[in-house]
Amino acid sequence: MAASPRRPRVYRGHFAGDGRRVAIVAGRFNEFITLRLVEGCMDMLVRHGVSSERIDLVWVPGAFEIPTAARHLARRGDVDAIICLGCVIRGDTPHFEHVSRETSRGIAEVGRRTGVPTIFGVLTVDTIEQAIERAGSKMGNRGAEAALAALEMADLVRKL
Image 1 (cartoon, one colour):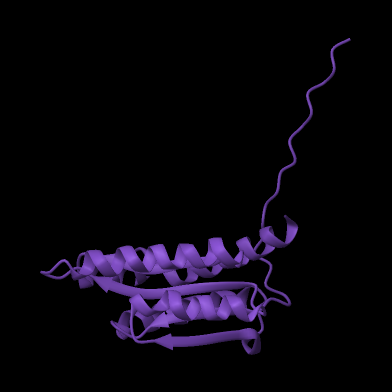
Image 2 (image 1 turned 180 degrees about the horizontal axis):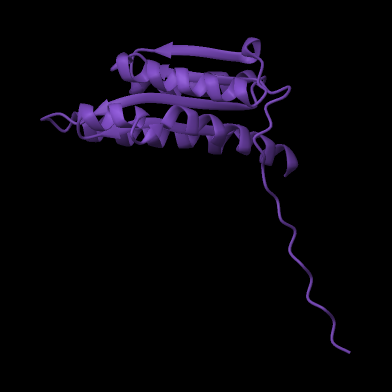
């Protein structure tokens, strides 16, 4: 008689916000866009059970500074997830490439080195119109999507 194959263990995170502490790090550069991302993010967190008193909002000058603040928050040891929000719009110089690359690399490094889910919610777009579409217009709100990813990852990491 052949042994039945073992079923894999399946782990999934859920959008559970009760009791969670979440930090948002937001870049002020292009604040008229970033503010909409922050509003969408905070609304989604609260709708999924995160108490507004357990949300820390940290403003930094721009996207490039986001990883530094995220690292300090992760090292504090009291947050379940960090959501990084900002907006980098392509210009006529290579500045966009440098800022986008280093910001994404830095955010990923914080998550890998600390184990705290660190979510990339920085818009990297070619035009202001694209930014507006992703900050609550046609394409939804990437800040709200980042909030869901943070809750799911915080729950998943706790289960693992």
